[in-house]
Image 1 (tube, helix red, strand yellow):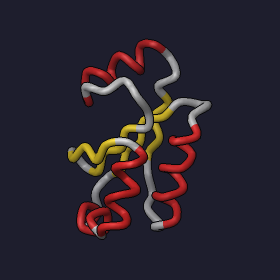
Image 2 (image 1 turned 45 degrees about the horizontal axis):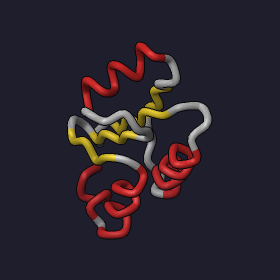
Image 3 (image 1 turned 90 degrees about the vertical axis):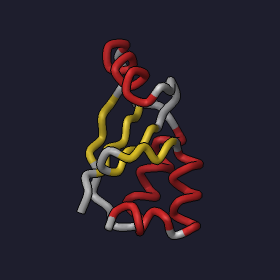
Image 4 (image 1 turned 135 degrees about the horizontal axis):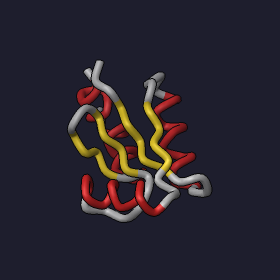
Amino acid sequence: MKTITIYTTRVCPYCVKAKSILKRNHLAFQEVDVSEDDARIALVQKSGRKTVPQVYIGEFHVGGCDDLEAAEQSGKLAELVS
């Protein structure tokens, strides 16, 4: 199984929703808190985006919460993690 990494902040309702999607699908994930400026700069350099959450499955950038939800609904999430 591929490693799932989710970049979050402490007070983000979309981050909570994205994590619950992963949990609902019984997927273990690593959470990286980017609340601090240095961590957020690293996220922008990696993804090109400033918003959270940002979800990666292996090296594949899924995107944000809406993208993760769409991947779940279409069945693509299951494909990505296998």
